[in-house]
Length: 537
Image 1 (cartoon, one colour):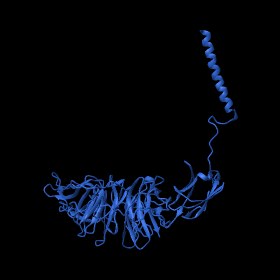
Image 2 (image 1 turned 60 degrees about the horizontal axis):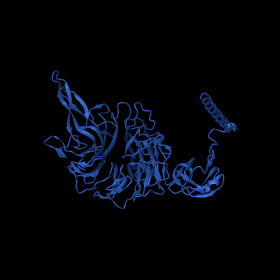
Image 3 (image 1 turned 90 degrees about the vertical axis):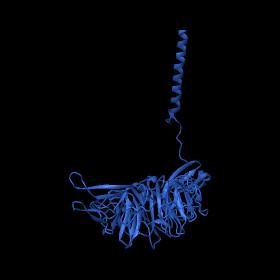
Image 4 (image 1 turned 180 degrees about the vertical axis):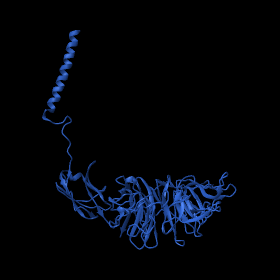
């Protein structure tokens, strides 16, 4: 028994020794334990891998490298994901034509399921970034809105505290006036103790008053306290004030508007009768009461009178709440409005209000995430979008012909596949003449309209209609990807594509040009800090 165990152990030891010897003999030639390395089928040249270094659709370009001839039957060349016609292949060159719908980005080769990434190639076309415009010196944080104002100038609002490398002590606080060439208009008021205490978004120019109406999320403006998310601003930049006489006889500076909102105002509209529509994410209208004193000492005191209103309210021109608009006079509060957020609003010519977002009811009545309200705040039942989209509407715009483009997180609208964008008739029914195909492979957040009817779509997506587009695409009036306006490489934020967004598109009067603002830091892979001027033919 003992000898048998010894034999077994000896055999095991011999087996291990032989295995070790066998392994050593296999590797004695110096190769790695996993065999020969797999070499790439092709290689791009390390320098001047493409000639010319830039071009436009239809140009012939030559890629340089080696190993191309052996794989030519399975070879594809892609310009930012779009296949290019191959003209000629040698072992060291591939001659191709820049393809229709090709755009700025990486040129790559595909062999079967393998991809080989080559040089960056900018593609130029009739819709291009204006590189003279100083967008690189734009805002240091988000620019959310832009409007034209007299003197060939523009007002911008947002979260920024600097613009155009101003070097102004105290910075440029969330509101700025800029010249048509993109530089900061230094005749406006900037610096320490100016601007709101928080962010700004909507802005309306009050031409008759030579003032701006602004909204956002703030509790003070300049050095004036108790200014709640809505204010009037003078043309020089200071908040419009009034002086309130307190019980003690002291005069206290206060906002010209007598009230505001506890929450965010993201939409402002001025009706034909000068009343103000305020839309946002809030639950209370607040009005400072300056006519109080402390009980014991008799000193001046202040209290915020609060009235419950939900997301939509109308103010008189002086900022007092208009209780004739969707208001419960018995319980002294606003009536029930939407059961979810409002992302976009638009005041129609007849003072009716269009709203859209992520709500499914208004005043308890079913609506498909978009609704039209009468001038008294009741639901306009003549507008009917049916069941609407399966997810939120993030933005909409009203075309000159009254039709309504809607975009958002949805994939279906009234059960029809839409890919995140749809067009409605003025009564809310779907317009069958618009078809964006598969649409975005992600989400659409913002829309813009180019004079003539072409449509700008931005959001968080890699492809639109099967075409590689980095968060940005231009469509024809019927929803197809525009064949010549999409050569740019889209928008990004410091390399993180998902963070770069367009928030507003503004056609520049009398020019084939657009101002676009947002949260992006690059357009077409070139630096543009939250503002860019695009020219088109």
